[in-house]
Amino acid sequence: GVGAVVLGGGGFGVYFAAAKRDTVGEIAFDNALPIPDLAESESGASGTRVFTLGLQAGETRFKGGPATRTWGVNGTYLGPTIRVRRGEQVEFAVHNGLDQATSLHWHGMHLPAAMDGGPHQLVPAGGTWRPRWTVDQPAATLWYHPHVHGATGDHMYRGLTGLFVVDDDVAVRLPSEYGVDDVPMIVQDRAFDGDNQFEQPVPLAGSLGVIGDEILVNGTIGPYFDVTTRLVRLRLLNGSNARLYHFGFSDDRRFSLVATDGGLLAEPWETDRLYLSPGERAEVVVAFEPGERVELRSYPSDHGGTLGRLDGFDDRLDICQFRAANALSGDAEVPGVLGAAPHLAGEPIAETRSFALASDQINGRSMAMDRIDFGVREGTVEVWEVVNDNGYLHNFHVHDVQFQVLTVDGEPPEPPLRGWKDTVLLVQGKRYRLAMRFRDHTDPNTPYMYHCHLLQHEDEGMMGQFVVLGDGEQVGAVPRKHHS
Ligand code: C2O
Ligand code: CU
Image (cartoon, rainbow, N blue to C red):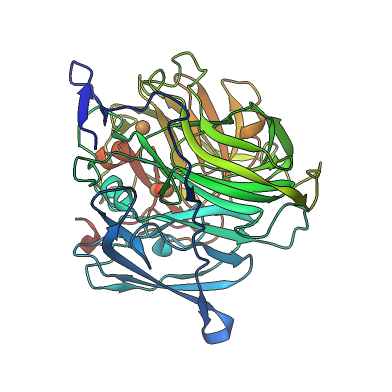
């Protein structure tokens, strides 16, 4: 077990586990990577797919010694992968078997605000929530997690997280056998105390939140994955509260980024390193040789301090070992053409808004449940200019839409920011121009959120609310019962 220590002075602190692992190769990689089950559905009226998700408390054994008290969805830690097709009607029965209210938010999903699972859609202890909507967006790796204002970090840290994969009819020859060559990887850091219990995120003003020294993939420390195909697609989710990852392989091999948050890139981007901040996803395709072993790691940042306070103390971390069989099957080439590139650049801009993130606030204001910050017009394209205005790591996430990064400080974005995104890492001081179209689901009284996805920042108020307005509609008011 490890203790915890608070670093830093002047009221600014970084909370992380003290006994940091600083050598690579210490990890035994003796646990097979578990693959989350695919959620089963029943068929409801007019073909609706009905999923039942039970939020529950339990115990999980992550290592030798006592089990850890955890939360999970249909299990004790994490939840099943939900997999749906574009065009399908889905409905969920979310049963809250916990002893307190929580919510389940479908991160990256385009859907009515009342179904979004944000802080206004709390499910009371013992209650059941039944959101339903029609899936209408391109194939992508989305995910779900709680979204209780002030407690999102705590509830997610306990284990309420799962993947939500959307498929569509766009035919691209990518590895696609779930758990075989299409592999979900929910990457999280955790700090354990001397009794193997999770160190809880400590509300320390101005800090990043909890940074753990143990890396879990799909809830397992030190996992290995048996590779049986030449190409493997990894669906990476940074499911950590605050930790930034800088992924790469132990032999610096190159791999292809094929999809970002909202779906396929226009063409693959070859790289040997990839940043992923909390909440972001990436689909990468990696080529393997028969019989080899290679590790996925996170490497120290190469941004030279411009990412803010996380920069400089992120160690090289072992994440997962890949063990290739002596004979590998399947394709050897990644297709050169993937999806449709975002196309909002030439569109008329109905509104430009600015967002400055600093001191747990956006534009100098803290989140208030009963304040709708602004309304956007359905059918229009807006440009949001976002800047990280202080010395800490931040990113920016918008509900309901996928956006296109038009420019970063006036320059065209790097390849990993050229696809659809719903969460973007904000390098300090740089101005990100994000274009997004709001469509469907008007509701003047039920807001969507935008916020930093470092969960302690979000919980401390670095979040705001907007509504999507129909023709002639005005910003309404959040119903009183939802204010608390
Ligand atoms: Cu991943 Cu507002 O959420
Ligand atoms: Cu932040």
